[in-house]
Length: 171
Image (cartoon, rainbow, N blue to C red; front, top):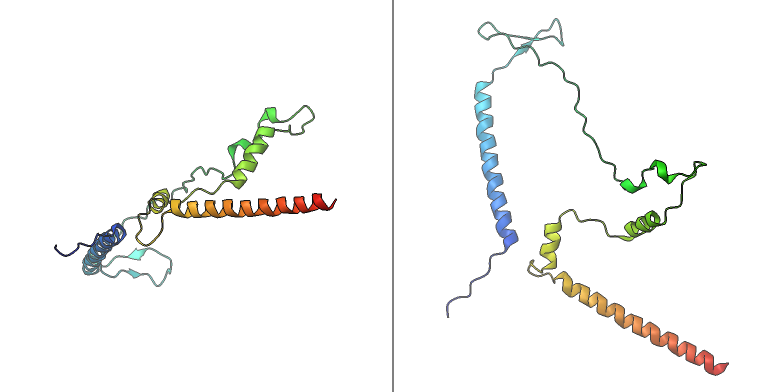
């Protein structure tokens, strides 16, 4: 038999590839920076007007005028609160008092106890499948937690049953 081949770890392979890309980008940045340093020449400002325009030297053409100032661009921001909570006209009665909405109350309570969404669902799926060497899969951990809960529920039931039996015999 030949020597056993060690499996490549996908996380370390991806890390190595990303480090190579970072090194390539850093070398490109250095190359562009050296080109910029060779091309750029210092410009002098007027001492008479500190915030005035740049004065061009004799062999340089005059600088182009600054670009016009544009208004800032605003994007529509969606609120984090539920859209169901916004007040619609049919949610108020004739006196202006908000109507009691049982399904909306149930949804708000249910959303309060729901787990927050994950920021990286692919990582969660990878961890759940047991793809990281050295970590147990989540299904195994869930099974342990479920069995522990069942065990302690049975013990609690036996203790309560015993307490009730002792209480009934004495009275």
